[in-house]
Length: 98
Image 1: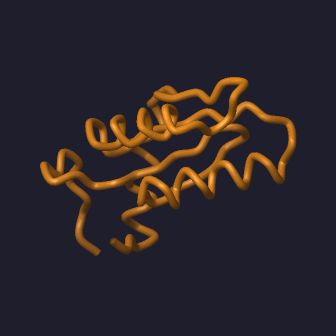
Image 2: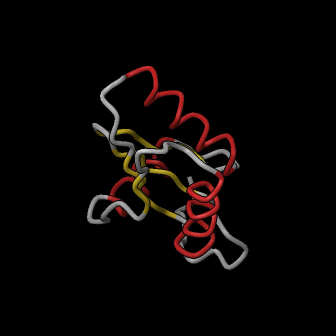
């Protein structure tokens, strides 16, 4: 699924008031954490994930892995927080047309 810039801006606006649903712990990105992110995406469609690491390269690798493994769309990264979107079959969030 490809989103236009206007659609991404709309989703970022919706995500603004959200709190991170999943926070990575000391073990990093495990199968359990990926399963939780996947489950949260299926339920909410639009979520924030907190990746508390000081190593910039490691943080980028973890966030890219999350996006790749879940099939989600990365909307933005603010500090340690990743905002991702994946539309479910129910289409809970209505995305405006172009």
